[in-house]
Structures are given as C-alpha cells and as structure tokens.
Length: 105
Image 1 (cartoon, rainbow, N blue to C red):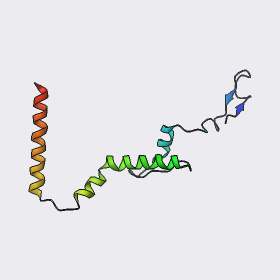
Image 2: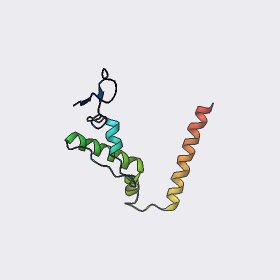
Image 3: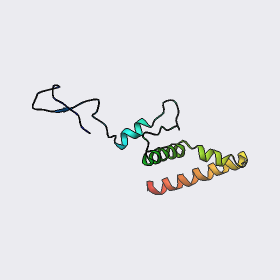
Image 4: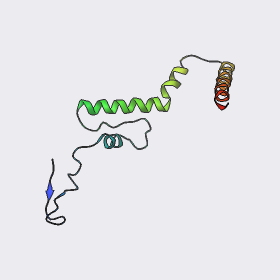
C-alpha cells in the first residue's frame, strides 16, 4: 500500500508519506520490535499471524539458549561435589591447552 503526497516536494517527484512508508516490516524490524526493554529473555509478538508467533518463539528460544538458563537448570537437577567440578574444569583446561599447543606449532 503506497500513499503518494504531491505537495511534499517537487511536483514531478512523488514521495511516499512518512506515516505509511513502512507498512511492510522487514525481518530485522520485527526482531527489533520484539525486544522488551529491561527484560533480557522476554519477547514481544509483533503481528497476529502464525508466522509472527513462530518468529517470536524462535527469538525466545535463541535468547534462552544464549543466556544459559536451561544449562543452569539441568546442572541443578543433581548435586555435584565441588571437587568433581574442579576436576572437570582442570581436565577441560588441560584439553584446551593441548589443542592450542598443537595449533601453535
């Protein structure tokens, strides 16, 4: 839907009205509008179609995965002794150092 204003600029250059310029939102615009200020993992649903809801769910899942909430919940299901955590951290650090040493040569 395009609404032309004839009195905005020169008569030979029709210009789209600013109010109706973006009746179609791009994917990036929808993602930007889906942001809820002050809530890191909250998502707004922009629009009323199934695709809009699916897009909002996709963004929500990505935010949850990136924030590490599910990993913390899964880790807290069972108790892990501090010594086991330290040992795992030490083994992981040794493995990463070994990989870095291989690529440094």
